[in-house]
Length: 82
Picture (cartoon, rainbow, N blue to C red):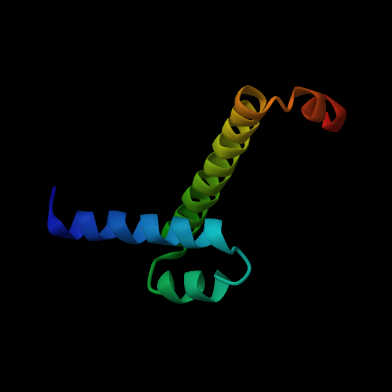
């Protein structure tokens, strides 16, 4: 793997993380960082960031429910919410 490829992967990871943390506040950052990319690469980067954010939020939401049920006996609370 070349150094250029590693830097590109790092930039993709940072952009994905920024979008997960604060999507509306980081849109100007995303636009400025991806301004030099062609339109198709910018859309691809955006889609990867959205998919990564959705996946992380879903996994952590499911894990927190599972941990809450097992560790804190929240089954009655979860049943009321659902």
